[in-house]
Amino acid sequence: MKTLIDLVRIIRRKGPQGEKIEEIKTILENNNYALKKMPIIEKKKKPKLRTDINFEKPFNNHKGQYTGKKLQAINEKKICRALFNDFGEVSDGLKVFENDTEKFRMKVMDYEIPLEKRRDKSMLISRKQLGIGDIDLVGKANEIWYIVECKYGADKMKLLESVFQSYTYYRMVMESNINCQHIIPAIAFFLFNKNNEIEKIKRSLEKLKSEINIDELIKNYRIELYYIYFNTKKLELIWERNGLRCPHFTDKMKKEIKLEKIVFP
Image (cartoon, rainbow, N blue to C red; front, side, top):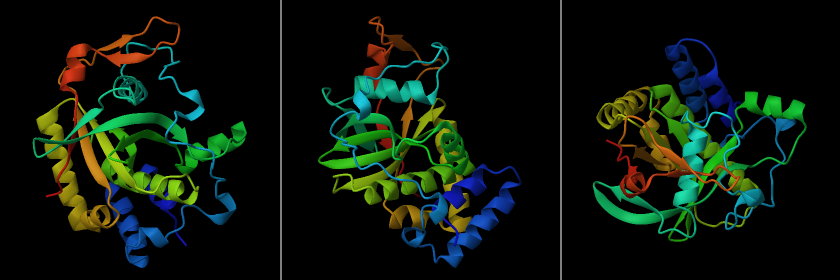
């Protein structure tokens, strides 16, 4: 039986997009589009899930620091840490909009949370190849927890991969007995060219709707799609000088940053 991780593997594999879409479509049709009935991974490779995660408290005392060498280059990891540092539990939260109306505030409670128990280096290599990663961000709003998969850009295959990844991590959380009752899988796209990239997302959704009924998957499994538009040609981050190197957005950017919901056409 094919698994959720198989769907991610197919997308990441080299080869023509059309062939990969057809293979995914066949798998979904054979399973009647019932993702909830598909196993996460093969039994012999099934990961041991953590049961010691408490979303109310940053995992392993996360402090929002960045330990990489290239401080100037902007990447997904730095943005996630900056969102945690500036819109965390002690803040007012990240503004969440739908159709130009602010709906609620979401507090970014944590980032890069591993769902598997620790393994040795050889297993970590296979883990990466299998497509099992960490939860990019965990947000909380009105007693609802959001498991957020973050992506740079928004091409069709990246969007499709995000849908399967977000649902897979949701399933892993539900099966790990983490003490959370209300959980929503979500995707956040980081955009720097708003009009072009939003149109690209909409075109990708329309194509995937006709090819594999992506709209039904998103609707049936309550996967919410958002984007954050960074209104600048060059994203600026400032760094704490306390030895931790924690990235923050500038005060001007903090006022502009918001999470905007993508309403499916």
